Amino acid sequence: DWSMAAYRAEMQKKIREQVGSGRVICGLSGGVDSAVAAVLIHEAIGDQLTCVFVDHGLMRLGEAEQVVTLFRDHYNIPLVHVEAEELFLSELAKCGADPEAKRKTIGRLFIEVFDAEAAKLGGADFLAQGTLYPDVIESVSFSGGPSVTIKSHHNVGGLPERMKMKLVEPLRELFKDEVRVLGRELGLPEAFVGRHPFPGPGLAIRCPGEITKEKLDILRKADAIYLDEIRKAGLYDVIWQAFAVLLPVRTVGVMGDYRTYDHVCALRAVTSVDGMTADFYPFDMNFLGRAATRIINEVKGINRVVYDVTSKPPGTIEWE
Ligand code: XMP
Image (cartoon, rainbow, N blue to C red):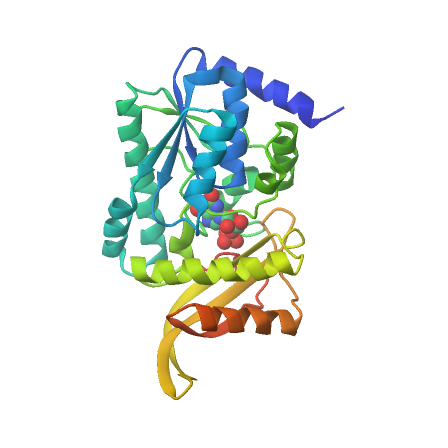
């Protein structure tokens, strides 16, 4: 008779067995998975755990503050907040437009930052991550097809040789919906448990082409307006994941008496059970018109909005 309460106790026993009296650091991404992993591990081993939140400058509007508030103030879990925007953006600037180069760079920098933070804490024996079952699968093969890497998930695939920390991944057997059940079981606030998934590489993979702070700022504003409209329409919980993408394409428009030449913003929304397959969300056209008008009126740098009607497969949920 399988239940989440039993799973919780079982996992905590396993975590204690694995780490013994070792020190663990856990990377928080702002997403549900790493938050659930952190709370689960903290319950199991207390302050042997330190959480590390790396602000890579690729977070959404206000997200960094929300994470820090939840963990420091609400949970009282030791948390190191690393300001790494300059590091990430300067290294990403060297990647050009190549999606895999961006992903690999972000993965490498995460490891470097965690290594450095672990050293500052006097050494850590384990690195905890909120890796889920679909992350494990998708990094290895594409269902039904040959073994091909579709995307390098930055949090899967083990660690470089030189890294001494071992991995703790208590959610490796779970799907997203199960992680949410576990999160509720652990008493995480509903607003956090119900959050849409957010990828580790953050807005970098929603900004095709070269990454600049200017583009990220434009994207953050458009994304916040889109999600605000989705919440107002009562659709947030119906949709698995929704976000804006800033395209590296400029088109001509007209605003008042002026010609504009600005970016195109694509809107994405999908329904899914586990992220492995997904259907585009069939919004009412009035909703899309409203969101587009607000984005174009309120965000300088965008003069055209399009909606992505691709399901997965053949598309992926993220654009990179
Ligand atoms: P795709 O784009 O592969 O995304 O259809 C499936 C789900 O995984 C999320 N995603 C990631 N999550 N690290 C993560 O933690 C990653 O590198 C990563 N890439 C994609 C994506 O947001 C979607 O929910």
